[in-house]
Picture 1: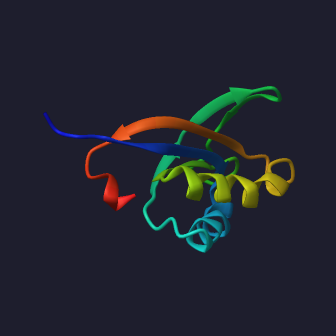
Picture 2: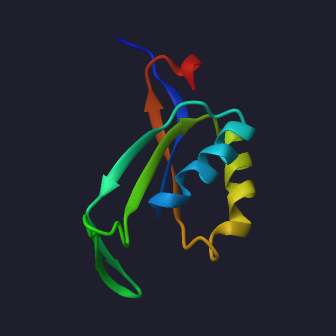
Length: 103
């Protein structure tokens, strides 16, 4: 059986123009791997929203990362002061990965 290693899955829902700033924070805590997922629509406490392809208004992206527990904690600490001002949705969960040395 293939051995797995415990890691943290980090997902950040963010306004698309802010993605470079958040990736800078990830690099600063030595998280180099990430994926961007375009989000077309959603809803929350402030109501529903939808991406406008013409103007780019309300464009949102999910940044997906896998990291060690220590690196994930460092990233959460770095992003905590930005949660309200950037209106981020930040989640961290446990995952099992194959080839854990890559994360």
